Amino acid sequence: MDIIVLGSEATEEDIRHIVKKLEGRGLKAHISTGTERTIIGVIGDTSKVTEEEEDSFRAASGVENVVRIVKPFKLASREFRKEDTVISVRGIAIGGRRIPVMAGPCAVENKTILTGIAEKVSAAGALFLRGGAFKPRTSPYAFQGLGEEGLRYLAEAREKTGLPIITEIMDPRDMDVITKYTDIIQIGARNMQNFRLLLEVGTSDKPVLLKRGLSSTIQEWLMSAEYILSRGNHNVMLCERGIRTFETATRNTLDLSAVPVLKQLTHLPVVVDPSHGVGKRDLVAPMAKAAVAAGADALIIEVHTNPEEAMSDGDQSLKPDQFDRLMKELKPIAAAVGREI
Ligand code: PEP
Ligand code: MN
Image (cartoon, helix red, strand yellow):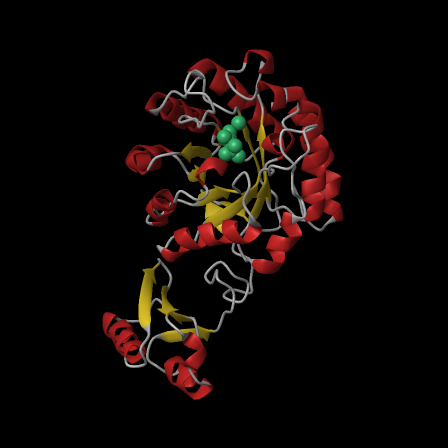
C-alpha cells in the first residue's frame, strides 16, 4: 500500500483519521491536495502492511482507492492511474486523440517578429504559441530574453491569434510574473533537476511541460515529474528533446524510444521536441513525423520568419512555409496511428 486516494467529498476529518491510522502502524503521510482528489502518499516501509490492513484503509470513509506501487515514482506511474491523463488548456486537450502542435520562435525577440510568427503558425494549424522570455543560454554574453516585456508580447499575440501560450521558467522568483501571463509553464532541460523550481511549479494551477534533462535517464525524469505531482499539480506533460550521446552529426540524439517506454511507465502525456532533438532545420520534419508515428501526444517545434537573423536557435528553426508543409504531411501519419493533427 503506497498511495491512498480520497475523493472530492472526503472531509478534513476523513483525512485526519487516515493519517492517525497510518501513524499507528509506524508510517507517515504525505498529503497532496488537488482540485478533484486528495492523495496521501504513504512514507515508510509499506511492505509490512498486510492485505487485511490494506482493506481496512480501503473501507475508511472518503477513500476512493488504495494502490500498491513498487516503482520509486508513484503518482506518475501507470499503476497509479491506468487511463491516460488528458490535460485541458483553454479547451484544447493534450493527451487525447488529437495531437496539438506548439510552434513559435525559440525566444521572443520583439513584438513585430513575434506577431508575424504567431500569425503564420496559427494559419498553418498550430494550436499553441511557444516563445522564451527568460532564456537559459550557455553563454552569459548571449541574448538572455526580454523578460516581462516578452511575456507581454506573448499575451498580445494570444489576443490576436487565440493561441494559448507556453513559456519557460528558470527561477522560482519569476513564478508570479510568468503565471500572470502564460497558459503552460515550461521547465527546460537544464532545470529538470532543479528541485526547488519543480516544487514551486507543483503549487501552481498551470499545466507544466517538463523537458528531459540533457543526460537524464527516463527514471530520473519521472522522479522529477513526481516532485511536481507530489505538490498537488497533476497537470504535467513530459517532453523528449534529445539527450547527450557520442554522436556529433546532430545537436542531440532524439530518443524516440522514450515515447513508447513512457507510455508503458506513465499515464502522463508525452510531447516531442524535434527541433532541439536534432538542431538542424532539414532534420526536423522527418523526426516530427517519426515522433507522431511513435505515439507522441503533442509536438513542440521552433519556427521563425527569418531564421538567419534569429537571436537563438536559428539553425533549427523552420521557415513558415516549411512548417506549413510539415503540418500537411503529418496528417496522414497521424491518421495511420489512429490520431489526428
Ligand atoms: C527551448 O525550448 O528553447 C529550450 C531552451 O529547450 P531545452 O530546455 O530543451 O534546451
Ligand atoms: Mn530553443
